[in-house]
Length: 220
Image 1 (spheres, rainbow, N blue to C red):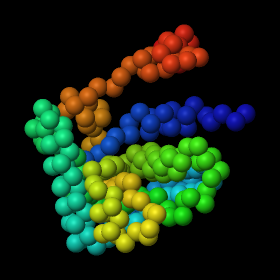
Image 2: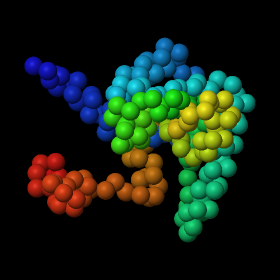
Image 3: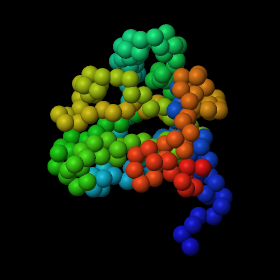
């Protein structure tokens, strides 16, 4: 009775399967109504204690984009140095599309989060999990609409917060590049570039305790 029809179910799983963290964009503008739909999809996400901790900042100022790109580039260099023997390999990767995409959003955690203890008393990081749910909603909606989205996390959140005038207690957690693409990657880009591989599901699902191999359908 509550099940979707087969076509709708297939579309949901297709969006999940084909969603990609995009880095290559065309500069074509994103239709404002489409952007509004993506933001609404994000806002429909679940959140612990229904706190809705997400805040989205649209970056329409070209100079601000360039300043943000500089912050990301500085962190990219620092990250490469921290990777040791993989430094050169990392520096060859394209890790963002801030100057290329049609739209840039910053996803941030709200200020005043200490007031929300429902579901967070022992797990305060659930506010971040809630924002991640909102971003995933937007990601899947963007893929269904034929738009690419890339989550950039290579930045100093304090520096970005100062650049954007975030109030005390708020925290930037993602730069989201959104826009039209020539094509979606056949596989996740880091898998295509041999940076890492997708681990077999059966190695990640346990039963009744840590490292107990699950003898059930979920591990097949």
